[in-house]
Image (tube, rainbow, N blue to C red; front, top):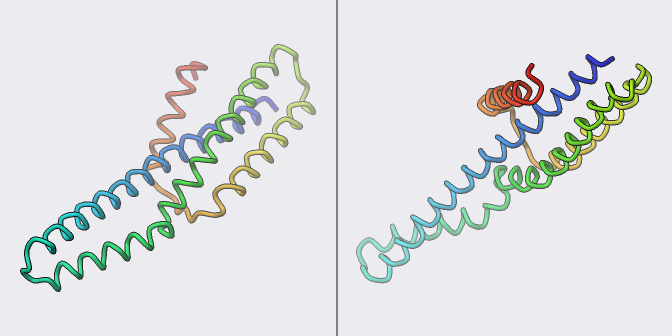
Length: 163
């Protein structure tokens, strides 16, 4: 049963790292969209005011920027970033609880029944958190985040547990 608990611990840590990398990705994309928005809108308005050359082009750029600004809250990356900003602290607290119980398993000599109860409890909490926060945001699987999360987990468990 200890192996099952360990597997649950590793998978939960993986999820935390995966969501963290997903958040960084969403922030990068949101930042890029914001920079593009600023780079187009500010010069377009300034140029439109000072030069009367090709006014339809400047008007079109301003319209495009306004459409992007209006649609921005509905972009999936904005929703992902918002959802993950709330999910990660709760998931990290859950991981601290899992780690604490992992240490108690040996100290207090938990039997298989107690370990099974802990596994069930923590899996339910993890599923509840994911449902609560990630159901509002479409999050396709990211192979890049997957690889980074795997590397982070290997490093974490190697540094903390020499595994």
